[in-house]
Length: 341
Image 1 (cartoon, rainbow, N blue to C red):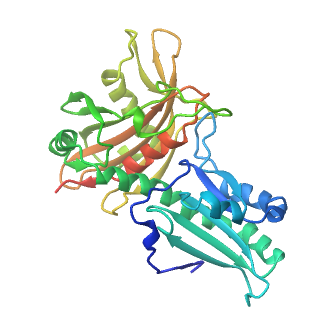
Image 2 (tube, helix red, strand yellow):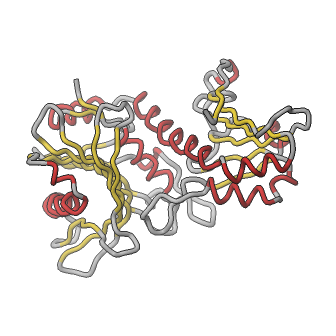
C-alpha cells in the first residue's frame, strides 16, 4: 500500500462545505520548497490532461500557500496536498497519508512527510502520479455524491421507466426532448461557476451542457468496436439533435488531433460494465461546420433488456472559458449509471 489512511473522525468538518474550485489542488509547503525542483516534479505529475479535448482540459491546476497562510483562511480547500519536512522523522522513504473530511465535508488531504529535502523530492518525482489518481477519482465522486443527495423525481422516473437505468443529476436538470429511444436533458448553468481562461469574471450563458440517453437493439459484441459506436452515435444524433439552423445537426469531429478515444469502463458502483468514449463534436450539415464542444459517453448492454444503451454528456462552450468543472460533472454522471431496481 502506497498510502496510509488516517482513521480519525474530525468533528470540525460537520456542516461545512469545501472551498476552492473544481480542478484545483492546493499545495501547502514552505516557499523555499515551492520555488525548488519540487514544483517542476509536481507540475509534471499532477497537471495532466483529459484527452482528446481542444483547448486542453487539465485535470488540475496547482495553487500554492505557505503553512501559515493555510491556517489563516484556506483550511477547507477541497483538494489539499501538504508537503512536510521533519528532520526528526525516522523514515527510509517518504510517508504518504490520506485523510478525508478534515476541515470540511468532502475534503481530501494528502500529506507527504519526509525527513529531508532529497527524500521529499524523490517522492514528488516518483510517487505523485499515484497521488494524482487519488485526487482525480475523488474529484468526480464528490460531484456524483452531491448530485445523488438531490432529488429530481420527474426526470429520474422518466429515465428509469424508459431505459431501465438510474443516473445522478442536479436537481434543476430539465428533460427537453423525449422519444421512445432518445432523451435529451439540459443541466443547469447555476450548478457551477463559469470563468474565463486567463482572467476573472463570469458569463452566465457561456457554457451549455447536457446529457443524452439513447438505446437501440443489441445484436452482438461487434457493436462495441469504437468505429461502430461512433457510426451509431452519428446516426442517432443526426435525427435527434438538430441545430437551430435547419439542415444542421450535432456530429462527431474526426480530425486527427481530436479523434475520439475509447476505453473500458465500470460504473461507480461496479454494477455496469461497458465502453467509454471521449471526443469533440461540431454541428454539421448543408452549411460549413458550426460551433461545437466536448462529449464523454458510456456505452453498455442493459443486463435485463436486449438493448445497447448510451449515456452521453456534452459541453458546448467557447474556448475562452474553462471547461473543467462542466466536464467533471459529465464524468460524474456517466460513472453514476446503475441498473434501476
